[in-house]
Image 1: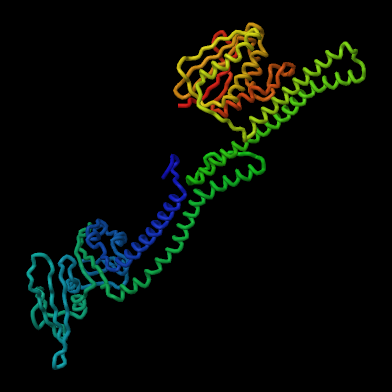
Image 2: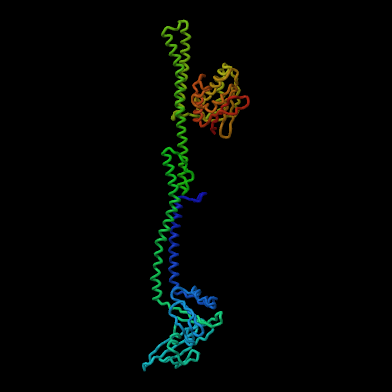
Length: 522
């Protein structure tokens, strides 16, 4: 789907852009959902208390740096010395001091114990407190410790193994607390301290409050959506809009006769093809314009040549007739004048016939009627009929025709005209004693007929334009002939599906050599 510059078709570009835009929106939604879900998970996510206890900053006394271990949402810690004096608190709500007994009532963080408290009013109206301590540490006994307290917090049954018989109100609150935990440590200065952790219990109300405030995160979707849309619009504009703009500029320049080339305008394959087609169209248009100019020049030259060729004999005929009519020609000279008029009239007739033949072969409706014929036999019969004419003109004939037949599709009358034109040119423009050559050779798909002579040859400056109308041996056009014979010959050869060319490097002993190539009729 892609080409060498990495851009595929317009359909592929639109599909890729749509899929990529959809994927981007999905990633935005997924990212926002992850942030939203992570924010809600933080409500239940515990602080890194183990990391806090293992952090060297705790023993070094750099307590403020320990806040990095806390999760946002209410967790806090405080540091007390062995006497229970507050040394540091990361938040509000900690007592400024605890007694040793109060510190011992705070549940140990490492003990993995939970104290459940049950209050019951007796029949006599007194209040009883039942406390059950359950240990969840691996290897501990499954049976819990049970202790009962009266309304004055005196131990009336059981105990937690610390030998205590009574508790103060604050100690009782700390003992039943689910939010405070303690862990001991030894500072670098050698004093024993306690880190007290406050872990608020997360209930449904706290979670719902966090959920209500987290929806604002989804407001980011709108600016992210518009940003992604703007990026993809810019991308499509660069991929499609910029190449189309270059094409439009090229069309405008072309309409203002300021030809430009689009080149590789980029973008999808269809737009690149339009650019390539535009360049080809511009080249063809430029070539057509150049051809039109050449045709205008040729038409002007054609009119000038026709005028010249018609004017000369007509002027001679009119002058001689005027002289005879005015009595300026003696009776004994009139016959010579009439013969000259007859000669010019014949030349004029020959010229008009040449114009007529040229107009016929150049007409779009000019068609041949070819038939399968042996080119070798055709050439033998033609040269046999022309032998006397060649011999009387003082020319010699050398022929090389193979014995095996060479079949081609020939219109006998028109192909004979081709040979007549070539032969008459050779006889007209060469001296006595010139040798004429006719050779035939056959290839896999074509037959080649060589018509050559060893005469004066064609001037080099005329070789390139020898098949154009009215091109003769000199620019002065003083020689005989209309200059249309070879143009007619080329047209007839083209109608046969063949070609005629002037060999720039004729065989040794030959000065002019025409190569006539015809397709074989298999």
